Amino acid sequence: MEELDGPASEARVDLFEYHLHDRPNSGGAPNLPLQQLVAYPATGDEGDDAYTYGFRLWAAAYILEAQLQLESFLENHAAHWRATYARNLLGRTLLESGQPRKAAGHFLENYRADQNAARAPDSLLYFARSMIELGEYGRACLALSRFKSEFSDRIRERLADLHRTITRDASCP
Image (cartoon, rainbow, N blue to C red; front, side, top):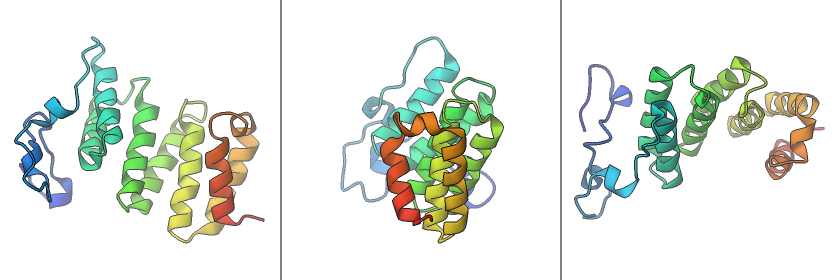
């Protein structure tokens, strides 16, 4: 893993050169490049391919690699229609890796960037989840209230279970 100038947390990895045996606790896994384990798409839309690869890494539980891929996508394709998906998924990877404060920043940024974007409601819910993990229940309840007022149609759709779980965990009045 190559490190650039700065702290290790800012290190970048060339995902195409990253090998499974380089992962911590790999347990002697075979020496396979990551791209042989998780296929990089080739649709002709460079931005969509970059996001989709980040999603595939996340879905395959390569959380650190997904974070790096999504950060790279956002640096190189900030205006792409998938940016809302990438900001939201980047927040989720951070939340899953125990960084709720950093995740909250990405969720809030995504919500504020375009409240009509496809993943704005998701980001508002996951912002509430981040606040719960930080013990900031008042802010979680505020986000849930805003979600209910702005996205009530989504409560009955695909986000209903997530909304119900987060609302229960926040113990909002």
